[in-house]
Length: 119
Image (tube, rainbow, N blue to C red; front, top):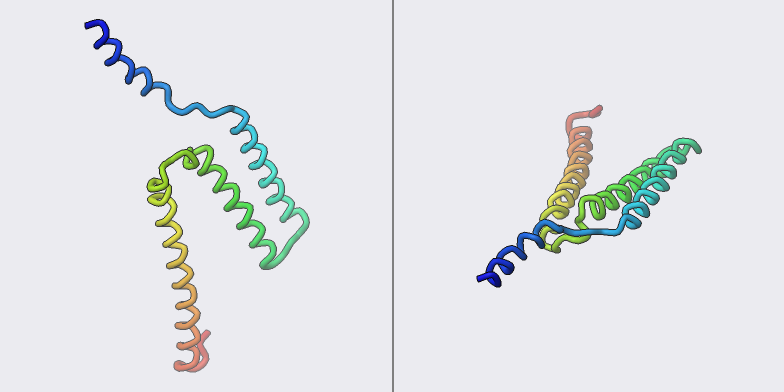
């Protein structure tokens, strides 16, 4: 009977442990985030303009978001199906926004041609 009690108590002890990741990993990611934030700041400091400015800002923003989601939100250690369930819908929405942007240009120029002048 004593053997049955220890077997029943064992899963509870394992359930409370959870995942343990080395602190060095988090410190490394904080360092990367600091470097990316510094590079993002330097884009404004060196007065980049136009498409290069916005491209660099978006690239640094996406890299920082990817690091935060993968490490601090523990997505790097999740099942692939959960990752797909979380990441695919926003990607699909971005594709739809891109399609709507192309469509809006078409509508604008169609109105300009057929209604005489447009904006």
